[in-house]
Image (cartoon, rainbow, N blue to C red; front, side, top):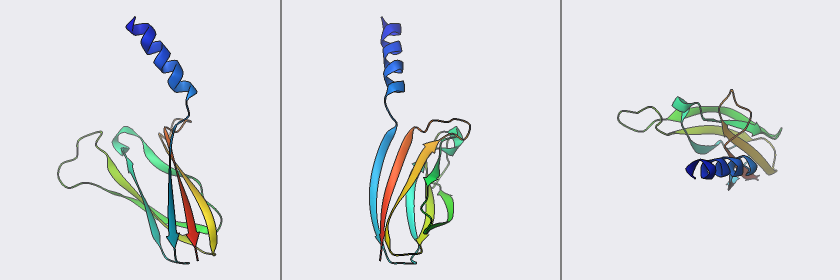
Length: 115
């Protein structure tokens, strides 16, 4: 019975889309802003920018690790630094995935309003 239950859960999980979160940010034109997302690089799961509008520039990204010893599989904060070059509203899409896999397990969309 447990095997049938597990098979049903696996089938259902492949049908469902990944988790999606949404965030809105208001920034001044040319002001650097950050997007912080939890990732687990020791397991291969890191955030990537999937969709970046032409008028938004990615300055870089870093990891902020918690104080103390980090165990394999422990989450860290991945911080993306960005700037908007022209006034307007833009949508940036981030995906959490392993580089060797095609499917993301999570999507995070950020709407940026720059003036």
